[in-house]
Image (cartoon, rainbow, N blue to C red; front, side, top):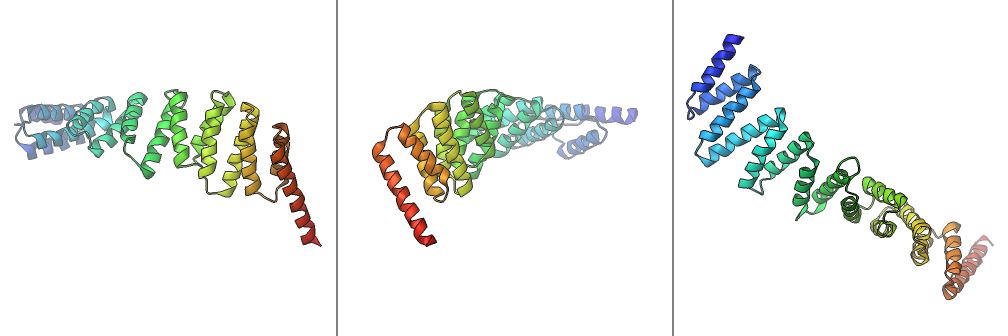
Length: 272
C-alpha cells in the first residue's frame, strides 16, 4: 500500500496541468486510496495554474465539494469566491448555507439567509423566515429583537406556524413587549382560516390585552370577534358584558343586553 501511495503522490507532482483526463483519473485513484488531503492539494494546484475561466470555475466547484465532506471551513472560502464571481448563483448560495451550517457559523448563515430573503415570495420566503427565526433563538444567536421581528412577519404569512406562535408566547410570558405580541397574534387571528385556531388566537389576545396591558378596548374587540365566531357559547357573551361594564361603555352595554334578551326570547320561541 505504501508503494502504491508513493506512486500516486509522485504522479500528482509530475502530472502536467493540461492533462485533464489523466488528472481526473489521478483524483479518483487518490480518493480510492483514502488520500483526501492529497486530492485537495492536487485540486488547489490545478486551480492556481488554470487560466481558462470556465475550467477554473469547474475546478473550484470540485475543490469546494471535496472540502464540504472533509473541511467545511475551507469549503466556505472557495464557495465565497465562487459567489463573488456570480452573486446570483443559486447552487453556490445553497452550498454556502450547507457549509455555514456544518461549520457552526450561525452569524454568517443568518446574514446569507437575510440577504436571500430580499425579493423572495411565497413558500420560499416562509422557509427562509422559519430558518432565520430558529437562528435568532436563545440557544443559537440569542437575538430576541430580530427573532420577534422575523416571527412577526412569519405569522402574517403563515398564521398557524407553530414555532412563531411559540416564540411570541414566550415573549408574552417574559413581558418583554406584550403590546407587540398582542398585535402579532391579532394579525395571526385575522389571517387564520381554521375556525378553531382562530378562536384560540382571539382568546389568547383577549387575555393578554386585559391581563398584561390593561387594554380593555382591545380585549372587548377580541371578545366581540368570539361572540360572532361562537354565537352559542355563553363565555364570550359574559366576558364581553363584564368588560363593557368595567370600561363604562354604557351605550354598548345596553345594546349587548338587548341583543341578549332578543336571543333568549328567540331560544324560548324555538323550544315552544
